[in-house]
Length: 118
Image (cartoon, rainbow, N blue to C red; front, side, top):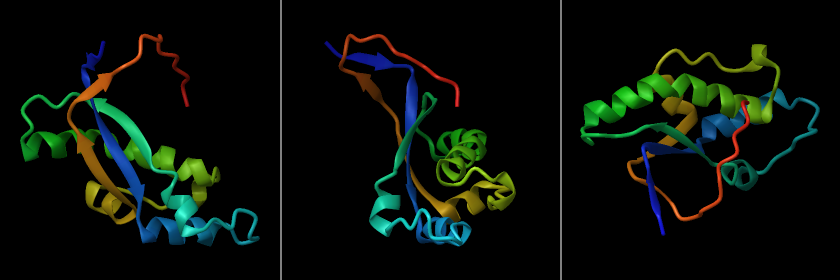
């Protein structure tokens, strides 16, 4: 049996600008990831449930969520916060990340959720 979750989700995919940033902070070549490796690190974030599906509502959800998502994405590759790009609005966020909102989330497992604060 499937269960409908009262959340929507955002699929985050890095852009070329993000990939260039990853390489710029890795001045010693320790990470040396390929574009493919960086793109493979796409992430899904649960966000507030979309109720109406209007463009305004979706933008509002992203306006409330983009900064936390950016922080998580930058920290995934580089933990020195001073080296992270300054993101002050959704337009700047979209320079580093492509995003796609998924309105309906279904859970197909009976297993309980485990959460860990990051």
